[in-house]
Length: 285
Image 1 (cartoon, rainbow, N blue to C red):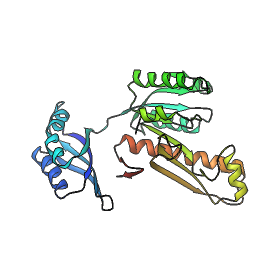
Image 2: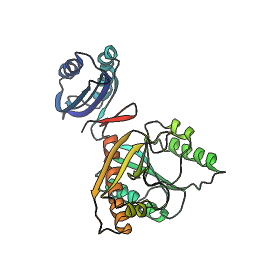
Image 3: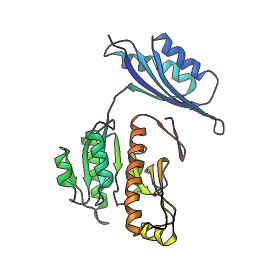
Image 4: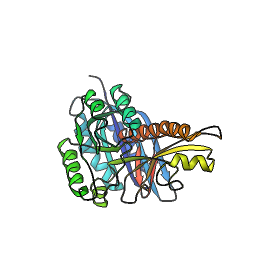
């Protein structure tokens, strides 16, 4: 019987013996460590670990490991997660009229580049309904106005529940989510925005950037919180530009940066590489 590969992620207050306890547990279960990343944050006194290992056994191996690891985790007050390698996350994408991030995520999913299944797409416009339908994915048009926002968000939560969604990705969804919705899905929503914020707020940020003569175009992917565009940062992308680039050039380069940063953030989240610690993240690559 082929060994079953698993990923174990954990974090806890830093103390002696954590690595030894985890290693002993894996050894006692006949497991072979394939890859291990860890980080001890001396400033905060917190420890993070992600280990990939191969364990002997059949279909019941995962549940057995989970049951028995609880005894290892308890003395260290660990937050932990253990699952088979190759587990795919159920993702819902939200989009408005800009389609570059949506297209990129759908392509990466279809080609097997991302470990996700896009189970639904929600939009406040119908612009991309044909594209989403071509991919064989359910499309939901949920228009939003100031007056209908509570009803629209209630419908969104209904879709999240009915499709058993694990992660919501805002792929240039141009609506501000309510504080209530943000608190209902903590650590389960990722947003992308250009890194000019807060310097270039409002309409046409790339035109504003051109007028200021920026030398870098960037994008930031972060978790969604009630603090608008201030959630823990997961991934960032920057691209050099110069005086020869027009506002349209900057916008095109910005689209590349946004797509790359968002795809990286989704990948790291779904591979269990992201740990949220307060207002920041630790990424074990």
